[in-house]
Structures are given as structure tokens and as C-alpha cells.
Image 1 (cartoon, rainbow, N blue to C red):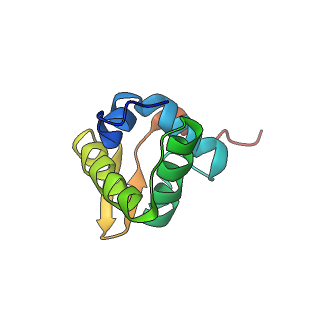
Image 2 (image 1 turned 60 degrees about the horizontal axis):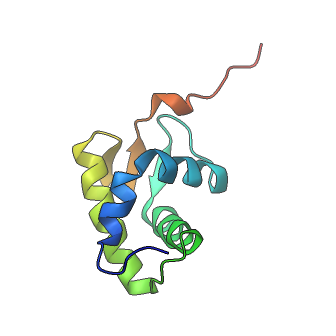
Length: 98
């Protein structure tokens, strides 16, 4: 269980690879694909629930915004509009059919 004194957004940011892989397992994520706020939001809620951290819908929206800002700074997400980003994560490049 997460320490409730520890900021949830910082936990996700500190475990970004695990979080992004969690998202990939649950949503169709590929390098250079769109990522929508609501998918990221539900991903935050699911990931934290998996970690046994309690989080409400509204709090999860705030955590999602904080995570998105940090991922933008790291160039993992490129903002397209207020609720859409482009995923810049070459590890998720789709394999071409041969």
C-alpha cells in the first residue's frame, strides 16, 4: 500500500516505465499515437488501485494533470490540445507486417 503522505503523482512519475507499461496493457498505445486525457485518467486510477492506493475520481483528475505536465517536460507526451497528446515512446513502435 502506498504511503498516503507520499504524493501520488510523484509515485507515478518515479515509476514511469511501470506506469506506461500498465497503460499499454490496458489501452492501445503505440509510439506516435494519440493519448486522450480520459484514457490517462482511468489509467491513473487503475494503476493506483492496483498499488492499493485509494483515490477518488476528482483527485485522480488532478494527479493525471500533474503526471501529464511532467511527461510533457520529459517529452514523453507532446501536447496537441487541452485533452490530447502524442505519445513519444519509441519502445512502443508497432512492428510492421512482413
